[in-house]
Image (cartoon, rainbow, N blue to C red; front, side, top):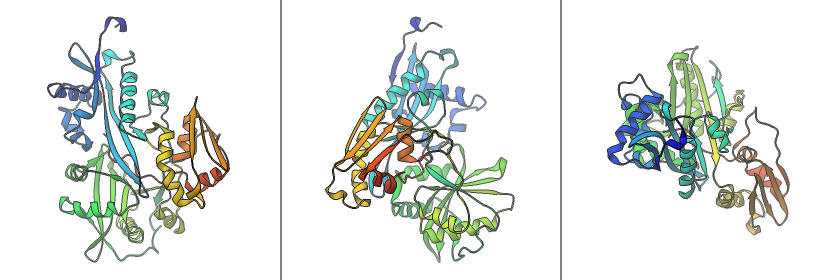
Length: 385
């Protein structure tokens, strides 16, 4: 099919009477054996939000959807400093219309829309060349630990751990609100994940950690039954109680069960696990991450830097970018980064398999790199579409 012979409508938000056809396109591309779209998409409960249609961009031909892409936006806190996180998922094109740059057109339009919505980081649920070409890449956003049988035998044991239900959402929200690094979610996020028992396409469950009858922490476990694996993808609350809860879970799990703990950069639980003799395993994000406007984001983070660095209450931070060269400077120091991926890794964490760093820093900016980076981020993948 020649591209010159085809006239497309969009990218635009689907109208209400078009949404069923867009959902059917996604089902046909992603889950062709599923009887209905909702049979499988309930495993990604963020698709259940009532504004899912308004967050989609779609291209139409002769009134039929032929390529579509979904997005979602959440605010997040980095020790009290607000950034915006965008998600891109459900990227699909009718096989008869592939190879014409439709997904590229949608990706460009979606990134522009997210930029207009003041988004700083975009997490894309995929690893296609399309995303790398747009400047997205993997980052080492967390530390990973494997709990072997007996690995936490000397941790405390003064807590109970129980499955959380809808009646516990207030406690879960309260515990999350006590975290300095977190995603700010509407209540519906918690409701959908608990009701459906899934997130990111796999079974999951929240567990409350209690001391006496008081909720002091929670764990969000994701399960891969086929390989006997249990993965911790979110936590909140008192870290000593969490360590005791992890020890209990390990003791009560079959020896053949793999228990994987993912902890954000800078979290004290990572230090506590290391003190127990459990070494972190190099890891990287499963999806790709795009920095939308590094200059704007660095400006948002300046108060965070001031909190952590001596003498920065009297400094001003300047940032400039051009041709994939990023420069930041103060009156007594400067930082230069060559390449968008290098800047991503500086801010969020460099994967073990990433190319060597091209970051050069001097003076006050070297202190910023050493003391403040990589940023401690919440798990960016929980709300994946």
